[in-house]
Length: 151
Image (cartoon, rainbow, N blue to C red; front, top):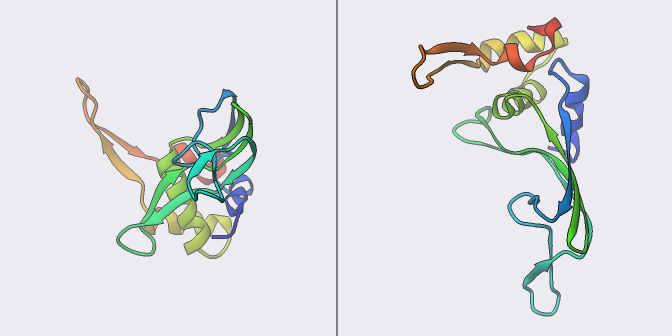
């Protein structure tokens, strides 16, 4: 996947992601560790003093080329000594959202309506959710992640 390709989600049938801002002491990983650099002399990692990190959407495939697994949300991080400003791209129902969007983006063709129809047929998001003390609830996550026009 090309760098920043996830930005195409903003012009798709999926609800627009929100930007979550963090400003404070370094606390947001990029993606697994706090921002860091390799010390050229010792070849060890050390904390980044000043700089940017651009983290793309983290995903992998599991059992087939269309079995997408969400790992982390995209983000931009700026570090200045012990302080960090991070902008994280968050979506409703993140796992279902990004996995369905990857299928839509990489494995469908046609108009947006045709592509969403193919998603619903070939990448269903029908689940039964069990909550303590409540009856099981059937949920189609496409109803939660798509714009109203495409539900």
